[in-house]
Image 1 (cartoon, one colour):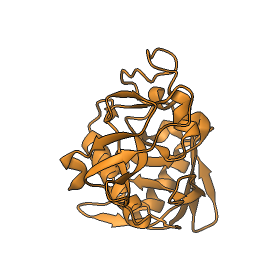
Image 2 (cartoon, helix red, strand yellow):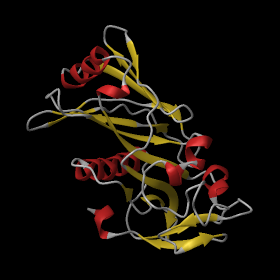
Image 3 (tube, helix red, strand yellow):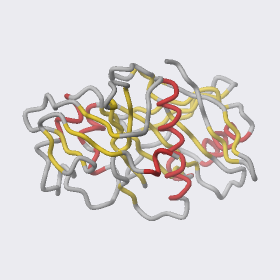
Image 4 (tube, rainbow, N blue to C red):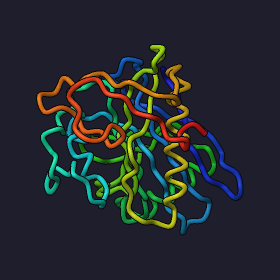
Length: 243
């Protein structure tokens, strides 16, 4: 499913435009998505939310945000499950970054991207999970790339499962976040992305869900499921995701 969507936060409305990129290896096969939110004020950062399935990105899921996680490949206590994110097809990483002027090679590039979002002249955005850089294409044809984006401020594991009646469904695992003034906006953006993904893929996001057994020898970790999972397991979707 091709779906383009870039969000620009202008006072006081949310202006919707579009974006998409890269094929996702899940049962419902939709394209990798990226969302950008920017305020018209030059002092407001670009809030960038991405969904990505790059193997390196998935293996580093527990270290993409500066928040304590047993899935941190460097310091975590349950890292034998990390391969499950890569081997099991129905898993993606949803991560949000706060992108500011220092994340670009020069201040003018940052300003061009901000202006492109607010004026709707940004026609395409891409995120490279392996290199952790974002690329923005303007109507002029110019492509602007960020420098390496270090830690994000919010991350979730996005998983595919099915309801008891067999209907496909997606859900977000627990939030891992670092405090930031715009954290609530990032959380709202993740909920919005989840709903867009479910709609585009014609899946559900509510009810009791069943996740198939892991193909990884070390299993896969699930906060919603209560820890390391090897076999088929069930999760109950929080009310927040149903709204």
